Image 1 (tube, rainbow, N blue to C red):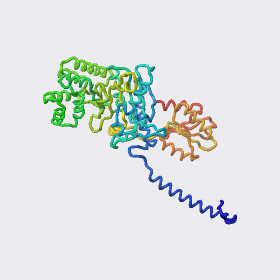
Image 2: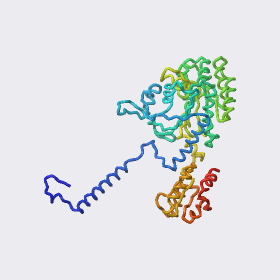
Image 3: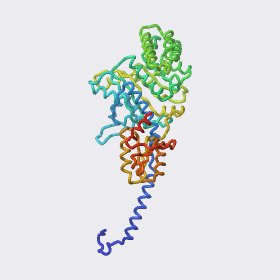
Image 4: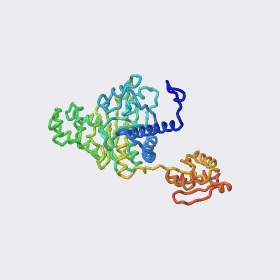
Length: 470
């Protein structure tokens, strides 16, 4: 250490002085860091999910993704950050008020992805060589600055499932069938219903009743559930709808029930004009297709379902819990005008965004949420350091058979190793010891029952994979 203006002797510090200074500095740093860490928590609406909890999330996500893949949807990967302009094109300031938007170091206005549909529309527009139909699935995090409440977070997982470049009842039915199959596989088929409508059907019914300002009237219909009959009639009156027409609209938008039966009811009550009949025929075809998929029992026609007027162009649907305790599980529909906003091609599209937060509330209520714990197929224990290499070699052989395997990393005794195996929920344990190895054997323990058996080293992988695969 050198201090300017001092003599050599004055510059010398004793060992104890240095030790004392370092000690004080260490206490200062520890105290400062501790206070700093005490003030750092995750942001509201953002969550730390430790391994046990996330294993449950992963189980549900896997079910959703695997169902989509079984229907032929192909996985894609998209950016977490997009140019803010992407969302201004369609959604406008209303959505941007809820986003995490900022200027990056290059001076560009960018936004953390609040939804993926605009990204997909951009991607489809950019590639004209994609095979038709384009069927995509992707699960990733999204971000919206909203009021945090039950089933609504600021950072959340979402799976988007879409079909592009096919405008058909068959595509509509496949999207709904995929969504219904997800809930069937999650074990809550009887607790979920899909409310389905077609904006073209609703619009044709309104026009057949002499109503021209259909967009304004559908905005009222979209709020019908929140309004009394008088409030509903008054809201329609404010938009120039006569009392007689308002009563007819009220009756028609009160039609709801099992999709096949309700289509027949609608056909008997709707105006007998060409456009209305054509729209009803399309809904009938959709009902027939859903019955062929085996999911019609989960679907209800509801003429009051409208959803985003500036977004959807035909089919619209929402999934709800049958008890009516939760907000919508998710929604979707046909949005045939969106892709064309990002280029020179008009491309039809239908799909939905599967949200997990509300579905998690439903699964927990129905006691169907997967157990929040990690699981391990095999824990390989070693009796002593002398057999550690053999234990590691055996663990690698088991991993090559796609088993989840852990070994001791802390040089613990055998009893402590078994305790660790219990903590990671190992189904089986292999004990590698010198005596057993001299006979070319290892001990295989069932961690649930405690039963043990001696198995030849060369046969242990096949032995365990056959048991675990049962």
